[in-house]
Image 1 (spheres, one colour):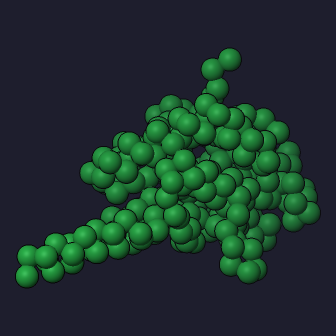
Image 2 (cartoon, helix red, strand yellow):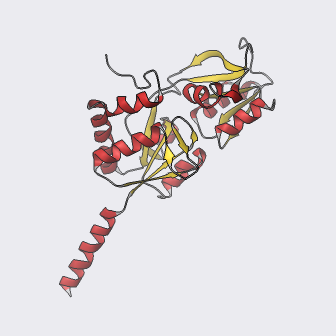
Image 3 (cartoon, helix red, strand yellow):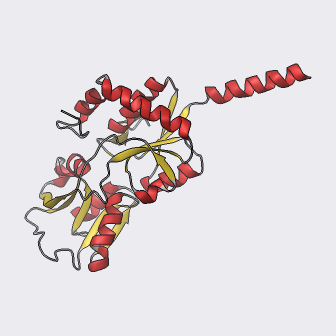
Length: 252
């Protein structure tokens, strides 16, 4: 009987180890992540995920989720990691654990070319943001409390549609996303970044990889793998596939 129990425990342990590492991402955010018609997930976040898994010698399984549902899903243990361009924030850090920062990009406003951003420009204006993103928290605190209408979207592409259709005055978004997913496309003709670069360290602490709260072992492995891909040039190689400039604050 003891031998049978021992074999059963050994099989269970092997079975658990053989399970793929489940990783959530948001596919509405090219060039960070998007989903091809065949269902495959590609982009910067997807490539970083696979590179980290390679360093951790882990089989990985990426799945697509709306951004605002990613943290609840992580809390519900639907997956172990979230690599979804998620800004590190004190509020989020209360419910998930974050890896070291893996990139840092400021926020920008997008509006029709020539739209002024001065004084109380936001009063009475409709500003679209990605629901659950750091831009929603910042815009709500800075502008929503002072006369702006902040509208959250499950997918930032829907905000661009409303901006194009005149149902929004501005979209506030990560600069790289706004450029790649809207301004550099034919759909974004006639629109531009307006106003200053927003990088208040109260909000822009960089983006991190979210891990289930308390999983110190996995967090340590993720951070070690991140250090490894930064050291051996893998990160830089991935970065150059998608960006012509550094999104990681390298030490020169």
